[in-house]
Image (cartoon, rainbow, N blue to C red; front, side, top):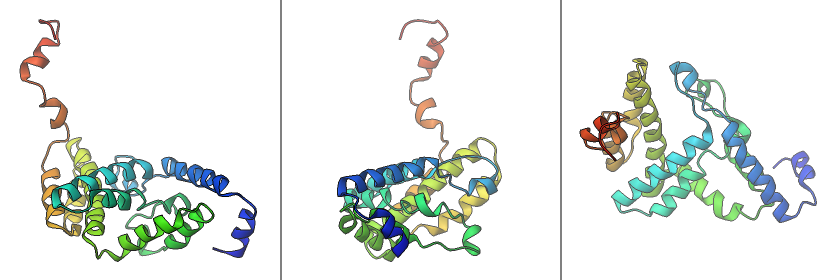
Length: 208
């Protein structure tokens, strides 16, 4: 952490710093995922992405027999630094870099949470444990799910993006889920859920 930034936090009690931190986490709701400007359709903020990524990571770990709670935590905090750095899409990364670890350290300073959270970040970055590999896969699968929805809604370019995302998967379970997600209609879960007769009855026919 820079000396100037530390000076700004001098004298703040731990609970005040935790409150600061939680306000900062809220910034992820206002931080857009910028890749969609190139796709041409779709919008998402980092908080939305982080939530489903954590759920995906939990599901992958359960299927793989890994530590599902740890995997979900890796996913939950994987983009926390973007409250300070913003989201760098794949085009921007060719020309820009950000101090992601420093941003996360500064966000956690004085909260008492650094000892628990920073090792998660280090594990995620090293991508050596099964849980970190599953978390990285969850990150990509969330993107693939969004891309498939845009493809279903008529954006043909999303197919190219899916094609580029699939090779990034690291684990066998991640690859399997990603392939299924890329070929499943995003409306099936609700449209095909009820028996066909249920939809027919909704036009004033019968009860239920």
